[in-house]
Length: 231
Image (cartoon, rainbow, N blue to C red; front, side):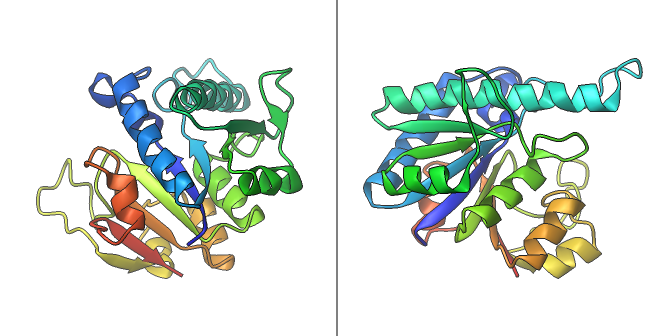
């Protein structure tokens, strides 16, 4: 695998605080990504916004406006994480599907691929740029567009289960599961739109717990303990 897209959940980056940022967690991610880029791997990153915003918090907020707030939350996350990456010695670029003044630049496949070849870590913020689509859909869309080899889904849990492990202690973890089964059983690896997009474009995924030591490096270098989603 040479080019990967890493999806980080906002909640996972918040650490035990569950909101905002936990710099120690972000720096742990940065040091792993730096090691991978130094080995020649090209890495794009999508970050969720759940550490700041999770959908409509009030019936008085229009769904479109709520989703726009969520998009901006992902931009804030990418700016913060990008700065931690830069302070760790990496070069980065932040791309969005809409204009954010001088904060980011507009997404372009050609520019993103050029940045990969230059050794930059590319952050894809702002989701798809449209309401009713999650960052799950955003990460699969960008992975397909930039021709990534695989998507890494770094979550607060360590893989895909047949039920919610927080509510059901008997929930069974999958080592391998097909995207067809994910869709048929609505296993919520990513949302349904993202699952179908991954299936139709044959984009595999690796799901693992971010909090485990060296989890990103281990996932890519053979010591994988999460769930492999095949296509």
